[in-house]
Image (cartoon, rainbow, N blue to C red; front, top):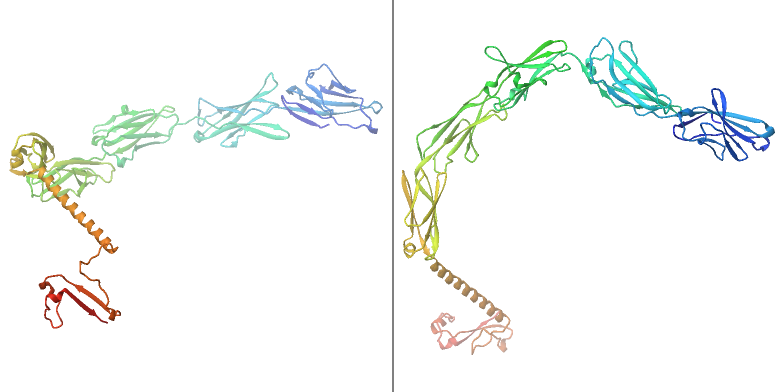
Length: 582
């Protein structure tokens, strides 16, 4: 029999009993016992193939297999005993052996809970740090403690443990351990955990808890006051925070003050005194100055303070001067000078009314001004050292002069009695007025120095003959232009004639192409009646002979002259042979 058999609670334990009998005899009986306080208590007898079970607490949970091993189902903590197997073989007497049954239950993962009250640093005595509990173990497990991964050992006046053990009605155990220790400021970031240890099949195993951080109380030693965003980059309109930081726990009471010419002014009403943050919204030039954060540590009633200088960068007094400042006429030149005040260096640039950059520097010179020159210019003062800090000033450059008509709908093809729109567009300053030489319905549109007038009118015979006059005027002069109206029918007739000529030309070209094609195919002969083919005389068939025939008048026949340069008689010109010999 094995010396030890291990079984988990609620499982089935199996205890083997192997034996041999001299002479290959058979057993007479097999008895199973358990030992209670040193005395055997009979459980069952196996004889003649039958099992006789005694009246014990095990009844109903025992069985014997074909291999004669004893099986105990639904193992409980009380089954942790010694079991005896006794074999009888008649005259061979009786033999027995025993096995220790060990019962176990793996403990649950330990639960840890840190002290909710917090622990003051450098306490003269150890205070409770955390408690660890693990339930349902058998036999009882034990608990160990760790700080930042290193096991803690009991140390007089510094570290100690208090363990408790509770046995439930099920026979399982709940183990608990409480850690007491003295902590320091550095323990505000320490992590504590516990582990429960147990034995199984000769091995020491463990389960660990989660890691927890404890609240450590300690007085303030240092105070810091800084500006968010960085003080050097604060500009007008920014939201600024003055953050006061103290390294004590719990946080002290914060107060804020600003230096005035007479004394310190309390500005704590603008602050979150619990978190040490003074919020300033939309700062301006007057927000600059010396600020102080003062803390009161309620633990030992000590006071500490820190100061910081807030500088708000700004740009003010942006102005643009125009030289000359008198009214400007077309062709004139003007100089624009831009200036501003700021505690930091400024750069200047100029843009037109469409936002396009036209120059850099604090001066802008415009020459040969026209109506088309942008009427509005903007000077922008920029602080390169403070991103986002810029201010601008706009100035209007008004160029005056008599009107200039820039667009008109002439000539215009119309038909009598139809309704047409006549358009006249001009540019001028001061704003001009537009008058038409005929009556109709007018609509005017104005954009910057441009004015456009649309006249809706029915075409009469008189209007078609005389046309219309657009007259634009202001205090500086008058401009006018004539709109010529043309009869649309005449225009159409000319168009028809042109189209007809083009069609005829195309027809002639097609006809000529067809005739040439037929001639090349031999369908049409080029000679007239009485005309002979070009042949070779029989006597000279090896020579090239070209026949030239002519029915022209005598004066045209003179083009063919004899060898002596004289003209032959007209009758002789009816047929000529030119012998081209090699």
